Length: 201
Figure 1 (tube, rainbow, N blue to C red):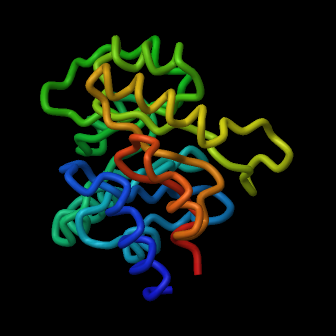
Figure 2 (cartoon, one colour):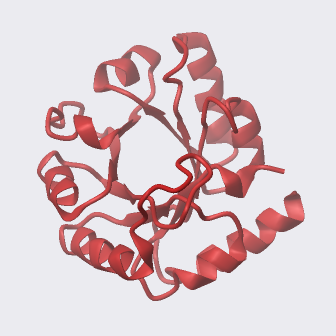
């Protein structure tokens, strides 16, 4: 597993060799990667973890310990949900699903906000809401949504260009399982990749 992630980390660096943004983002999921501790352990230093605790009520103590562990490892912890949840747990970073972008307005100075986006309209909405970065999906066919419609590499490049013009780094999400997929994304203008499968043994 460690060897595979080392290859992934090298491949990701070629996407944006001069960039200063986080390059790898792990996401927890209720079925395939439910444990945020396992996800954090798999992450290379300088990455980010989006903790999607939709299926449970995350508690402050777990969040405090995760935040400390992430900071020690040089990683960023983001919780998926509302700004109120982030504040209650003491986590500065929040991740919004696309359906919640329009309702969000930045109200916590210094908070990191990422959003899921599937279209040009969503990216523009994310910019208006003050998002710091967007996760564009689904780029390739995914295990989470078998048979679902995908954006493809060309459309990803267009959406990443729009996000960049609006001052937001873009990340590719969905169906990216190894370094071969990452190499296909070179030249699209993305800052990095996000996912679950990349971090599974």
